Image (cartoon, rainbow, N blue to C red):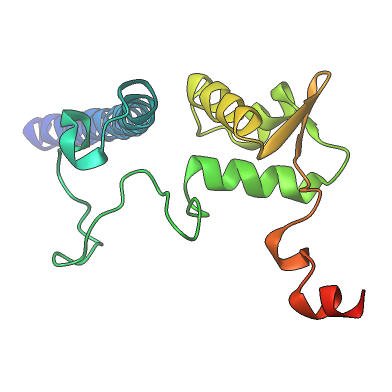
Length: 160
């Protein structure tokens, strides 16, 4: 009977160690994914590289994507950033706050899974690109003075 108790303790110990390692593995994988995303973004910005030409873009393809479908690494395109990307979520967050805006610390609290350096890069890019405006310590989404949809049409010019 003493052997059964020893084996039960060994089994419990192995399960606990496996659970601890699994949690550590998930934490490391999350951090690695953040670093890969930051590396991709920075490579495109700094090197002006096309995503397919950069070593940072190679790696295992997520299993939930269709194999014949082209992969968009930067999330850019005619529809803009994807809503599940860090930049897309940042942009949506700033749009939600309206004219009030958010401080950098508030943005970090609301997007805890995005690395601080990635947030800094995206905020800088958005301000430089005219997508966002910095007002003191707060960031707000830029409101275009007049978008293409609001531009005067030929009908309006016929009335003058």
